Length: 93
Image (tube, rainbow, N blue to C red; front, side):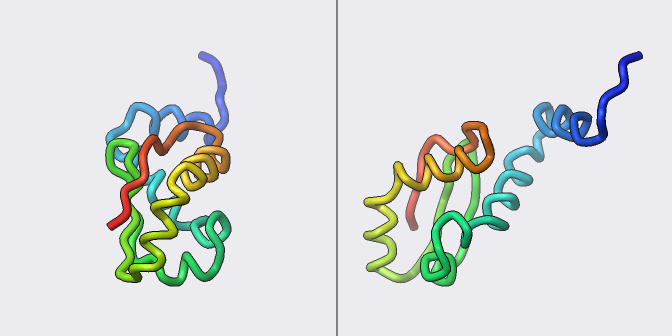
């Protein structure tokens, strides 16, 4: 039997698991301030990842407008940070 590291074993498990998106959403939340900056992070109320759709919730109208214009940038930053295509679409609520 081949030996693999614990990290590799966990990654293989997550790839086949239904909890993969929940783990990815938690990872995105952990680095959201680093990716988007302190101001945007402080006014972002919730972040969810469902079927490769990143759902960002905020009640600040100006921020909603800014995030709408930055959708492609958000997708690129998140996917580059995690080295895989976790996000295909951004939805602002």
